[in-house]
Length: 286
Image 1: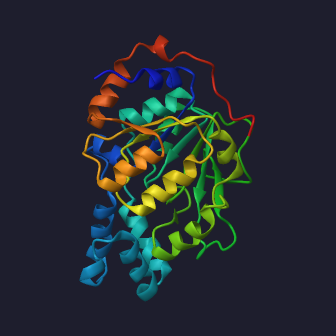
Image 2: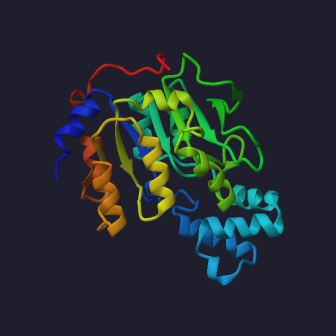
């Protein structure tokens, strides 16, 4: 299966916004961190006794640990789960090398930031913050060295947006029910989404990689992050969509690319470089 023509055009113009989910870690077998919400829930509940009926529900299990063992215990558990040194895969490195103004990474690992660092591009990141730890502050900005920043630098070529937080550099996590209730209460009016991210997405096309939309939380975040962007998007989704996934894809005009992610990445990597040559992107305008 060849890459869709519109997708090729958007990529050539550097008009894409890669949106990564935990499934991209399946391409890096040596990356020893949880690669799905179910796997993370299993790891958290293996260390702390949680009622059986919520053991497989990540946000509810995390909330139980936070309520009965304290927030610090939950953060320590998340730190342990994502402690292994991140190993970027070929997809991470390819994305880092393209110079996209914005990359969204909706999981807690730091493989994408490690790829940015290895590639040597000028970059920084913004992460979602838990209101239970940083009340009144929705996001935290960091430069490539992990130092806190006031906002994006004009020198950055790429902003990495981690809406759920990340293990590195500051152990910020949105993971419990309470974390998400706070964000979802405000996300319809875009308060938790940084203004530079809102501006960078205008007119651009999202490419979803390693994402599933089979739960309401995932759909809500994607829908709000995509708001006021282009009307055309793509998702590499080899699995048969659930009824709600199919409805979401139709609603958001997301074309399903029905091929395994590793096959898609292989085709991406062997494509001739001149196909992707276009105007170099910049975040200066933000």
